[in-house]
Every structure is written in structure tokens, then in C-alpha cells.
Image (tube, rainbow, N blue to C red; front, top):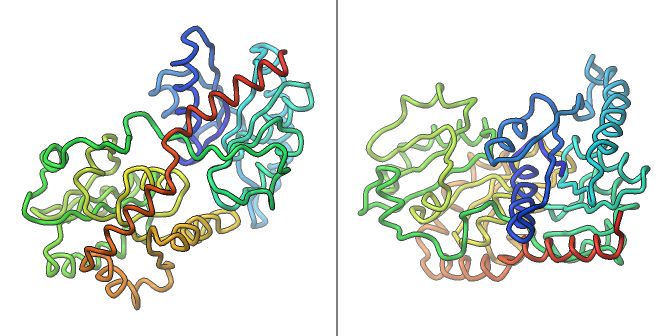
Length: 359
């Protein structure tokens, strides 16, 4: 299993491993990530072994990192060769991120079966590169044949991390867990697993507005920003660097402000929460904007670009919070787009590949 850099690549990989482990308790798993990235912590926390490659993303600016990239890639391919020859997998699965590129490419060169899982509505460069020799590409959105060979596509949806289901715990449990007041609606703010600087700055500037609207905040700001904003905690602002119990956070929330990473979008589809997406403009191929546009096109959410926050936020936000019919239609549209059986579909697909292409 390989995928990392952000939670959007890591958690689907963990979810697939958990699904396989449930079906095959004696199966063996090995994750491969990038040294120094969050997968090196999150994967062992989930109970799986991981090895780290000396690899990083391709810098768009002339720098020492850019000059070092060819050496990192060659060394990571060599590391991948050793890992594959020692572990001898039945299947190699990539969920995106630069760590998956050398491992899956080397696996394809050696003749191992590979499966690519693409979380976004716009395919990333790594997965497009790997898809040509992959046995199957599992996708989360329809109409992905424009990026991948149609004969290899399985419309599976995104695997969701354990514990998040359509049937959430009682709302009272969520309010109690996060010290929230029963009489005020709750806005859940998510900036992704690493936090989002622009969202944090904007939310901090809007605290008087939220108070005037009678709204309390459950705000995941990210570990990098917690010290900067921790003094803003109050009776109506509950601030966390990272929220580990997301089912309780979702059940507490009336509405959500979120980045439009694949993991967050898939979870919000499943739990059916009215959402306002603020896509990150700093990701490859601007894929978060394309994810959000796909949601908006289905009437399942709203989107504001970072550059338009100052001018448009309050009008768009109030169009959601003050229209109960719109909230209801958003919830219904979100759930229609959800694929709660995604992990099971991918596990069945893996079974077929291994039976058809035994090592």
C-alpha cells in the first residue's frame, strides 16, 4: 500500500487495508510512504508497518529541492525494488501522492499487479502516469474515462476511515464531547489534516459576525496554527489542533466549512451535512476546485474561492444557514452522491485481480 502526504491519500489506504484485513484476517500488509510526512505517524497509529522513501514532490521553482529530485527518484526506485523483492506482494495499491509513484512504477516494471485508487474528480499526474499499466483504477466520480483507460475503471467511491457511517451517534453526545451549547447551532470548520492558513485567518476575522448570528464554532485549525489561535477559545468557540473523533464532530455540526480535499468531500457526502467549500488554490492541477465544482453542480453544496471570501462569504453563508429547505435538499443531494459501500467494492475488485493474476 502506498499513498501519503495528506490525510486524503493516507486514510483511503488505511480504509482499504482494514477492509481487506476484515475479509482476510491472516493477510499481511506493508505501507510505503515518504520519510518525514504524516503517513509515517498515522499508519503505525492504525496498526500497520510502514517503510519510508527518500522522495518529495517536484518543486515548481528552481531550488536545491528541484536539483535533488532526480537523485531522490532514482534512490526511491532502488529502495522500492528492495522492498518489493523482500515482501513479494500479491498486489500493490497506490492511493496517490508522490510516495506511490516510485513504488508502483517499480512494481509494474517487475510484473506485480497494481491497483490505483483516484480520490478526486480530476486525476493527478502521478495516477495518470501509473494508470497505463495498472490492472484496475478505482475512481470516486463518474466520467473519469477522460483521464484513464475506460476498460480499467471501477466506479467505487472513496473508502472512508473507520467509524464514519451514514448513521451518526446522537447529536447530544457530540455536543457533550466538545463542550458545545445545546441551544446554539454549530458550525464545524475543517481546514484539512494539516490546517489551512487562509481559512484560519478568515474565520478568526469573522468571529464577531458568527457571534452576531448566534452560531458557535467547532474549529479544527491544524497543529501548525493551534498556538496562534488558542487564545480565541470561548464559550462559543471550541478550538482543536486535530479532531480524532470525527463521527461526534459531524453529529454535533449543523453546517460545515471545509477544504475540498477528496477525503473531506467523501465523508461529508456520507454524513449528509450542508457544506460551504473553500478549495485550496495551492494543490496540483487545482483539483480541490474541481471537486467542489462537481458538488455544486449536483446541488449538494456551495463554493467560494479564497480570493472572493471578503466580498461573498456572508451572503453565501446566510443563504445556507437561513434556508431550511436548501439545507434539506443539500443533505439529500450529498447522500445521493455518497458511496457507503466503497471499501467493500474495492475489496471485491482486489479479490478478482488476485484470482485472475496470481503471482
